[in-house]
Image (cartoon, rainbow, N blue to C red; front, side, top):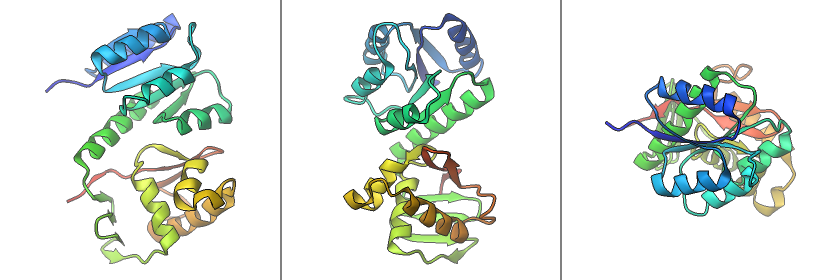
Length: 232
């Protein structure tokens, strides 16, 4: 079985010296590029399974690279950046990034984010309508949700929010993405809607709502749903 191919677009040599052996030790195939121009050319010629993209490239802003990648590729892109402002994270995620790691970061966190991004892509390709995690089971085709074998009744808005999160399982969903998808144009800027309905979902679908396992808050950015695997 061919191992996933990861393309690194990063101009910092010390970071490349860390990334390449870290990824190779996990048996990923690795390509690296120093500039945006070189990275985009490699992306087109090799069609990698995942891209690690720095925002501060010497010849072009990483946001522009992300925007161009998204015109023809839906493969996961994980941003690596020293820009630690929440607005940069939100902008990158809204433009189609799958995840965002602020420098400096450790190998364990990097590898975990890569596994999640690749697993999400595989699940999307398989397109199973049922997701299970622990005692939680979500059947999108039947519009049925259960916890520990017991059917859980959700309101229409609760279900729409849950569905939007499930379709991004493992990925960060920004406040803006969720508000637009669940509430439409009238929801713009009303992040308190999300706090209220996320609290409702946690009360109904988490074993311990005060220590959520599935519905994770990404402070000032949005939410991430963590479901382990597709079900049958």
